[in-house]
Length: 155
DNA sequence: GCCAACGTTGGC
DNA sequence: GCCAACGTTGGC
Image 1 (cartoon, chains in turn green, brown, blue):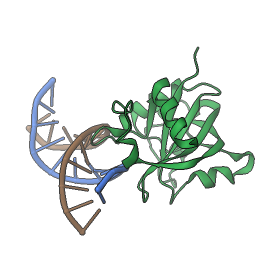
Image 2: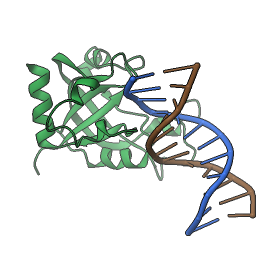
Image 3: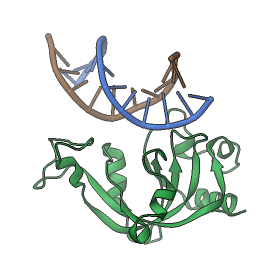
Image 4: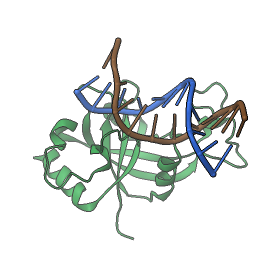
């Protein structure tokens, strides 16, 4: 299968691309996804898929760099923990509702790409990220979109 | 702080 | 199954 590309949103005040870089093995599990459409995308991810690391609720919001999938979908255990912010009693170890992947830092872009600038780019108009009211925290990115964004980020 | 655009919940 | 109320996301 051809390599797939994705975009993952994170609020840098809770977990930034710098936090990912400073993790042991520069790797984390991407927990807390509690939306079915996003969950379905999580389950489609395969090893070595490439990911845009997006900073949401940031000033400015935008794409900060690249990561890759180093662990395919497995049950999100934070859903089982009643003390966890993302606890969901409907999800059980026997029949988990929510899944997560392992993600490893690849690099930060030379240029942080603010959302505002992406809106102006020819070829990106169809991106889910740019759709008015888009809230999906896990999104597919097409080959064409991926290439345009990498070119901008590394320029 | 505001609010548009959702997704979810629960009464009926 | 419908839909109003509510809660959340996230840009601005």
